[in-house]
Length: 268
Image (cartoon, rainbow, N blue to C red; front, side, top):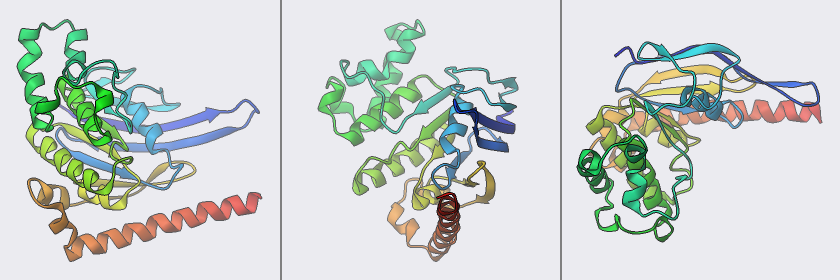
């Protein structure tokens, strides 16, 4: 497989008053199969817009997205999305939610049943498979969303702030689970986050985006995701190298935010 390639992606939104917003400009990335990349940047830098283009929900104004040699022109099961909120079917139980994709693809229970049960077990919901979604906590619902995504066996998993609404302890547990699933499945993963610490933990590649228009500002290759697989993430975060990198990127994002606020003050 040739992986995921973004070639000179730009996105412009035309507004009703005749003005426009240049959300992205000339973004190019090349991900090999199985890579884990986090995307970080200040609010308004186009992170979610970029993810929606890769998902096929938006068509870019310019540029192309190709996956395994063919151009992305719309949503497809080869690209799975985990949203900030699970977007689950509240009236279905856990197992029916996880098995929804295979069932819609026409598979029989004998084809998907064992894999669905395995995924439910892997995300720690074995004893909750018959529970309705509304009976679950927020963290448990995000586990269901991740299992449902994996049940479709996508080549690429796109995650848009999937852990942002969780409490600190649940978030840390989910971060460890994401790392373990990435290593177990070998999937290509792109994670959008506002958390510098999370971006460092969950990105063997980390892309920092700059705003107005959204573009790649800096890219890092990091060891922390690999180190965190099966390990206590608190120990990873104690490393001097992790602390130094966190402070470097925090300062970078802070300076971007200050520049944004300065622009807004000039307009006012």
